Image (cartoon, rainbow, N blue to C red; front, side):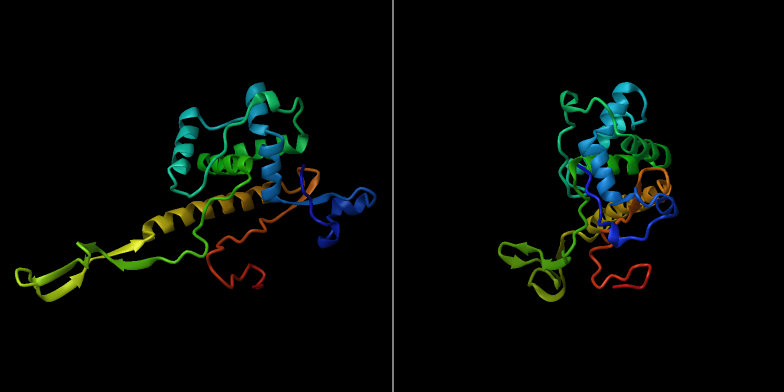
Length: 218
């Protein structure tokens, strides 16, 4: 089921105004993608009928390997079964899927489809702070000395970071890539479906507190 937003929370588009008895429902772009792949199984149905594009098997395998190795911190559900697929694909789901495949880069396609099907988001280490801690050796901090034989004149202490800053940066880059793909998709779908597509409502950088959006609102 596609969860739509309260009509009172948005301004009717011109198309809606021309037909006030049937205004278009509002849906967040993230929810639209989830519905397209989790409920409608658009990628499976279009692949079976030959109507849609999908990254090559090797690319898809690589995408799943990246995620399952924890590099972007999420677990991917199974591919699903065609025995449970709908016989007919909703037109709006087909439009959404075809738009994703035609305007998004391969990695963006993979992120949108896999997270849409799983109803998940890429990890972003929200609330996680990188901590420095001394590297221990035999119960003591590992220290380098100018006089190592007598352990005099310490130079520095070996330090490790948890989690690694490079890993945090990479994970967040993947999250931003996913978010930007959703935002671009929303723009591309303007006027193409029976919905007033908004969002993404989720912040682009949720790890930044007191986030200010493009309208200057916190």
